[in-house]
Image 1 (spheres, each protein chain N blue to C red):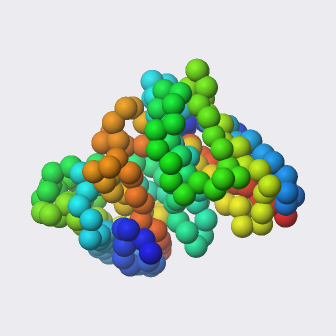
Image 2: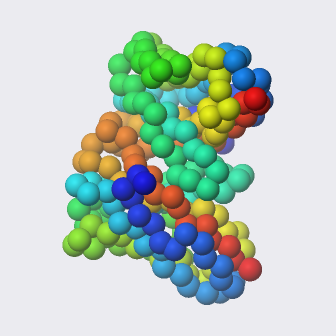
Length: 110
Length: 113
């Protein structure tokens, strides 16, 4: 059982559409990170959120940390084929363990 | 190039053998983490070293061991290999605090035949 549940597991959309992926847990995290991983490469850090309710924007990507610091969402506006990849969330527990979710595999078709 | 270097990129070996994976962290990073990624398990934390000392252990098998050397590079040793050990092995590094995020290498793809 994953400590961090990511949904959906797979998502296939057309270029230009908007999407939201979710990262949920019953645990409280001191911080949460989002990574994007492309085939044959390691995950690349997109953002770290620390404060409950925090919202961070990175161009067309908007990240939100839940008020209770148990969940997070990633919203992509006007998706592009270059956004294709595996999106992973990772939560830092109070004991300093970092837990990764299984990821959402996004495909954006031209 | 993320700054974290992993070698080799690919490794094919037989069951029962032993292999060593190598990682050089990003310049200035003191922490090194090893992760295993397989299709059905996702990213699984194996072990962390900080400035040469073991800091945390995750789901690392007894057949696996690691160390971090004075120059901060790290090696992951996998022995008595089994078919189920086939996976991507990633090394990541960070500055002392987790909140800065991890920088991952490109991984070593291990295939046990």
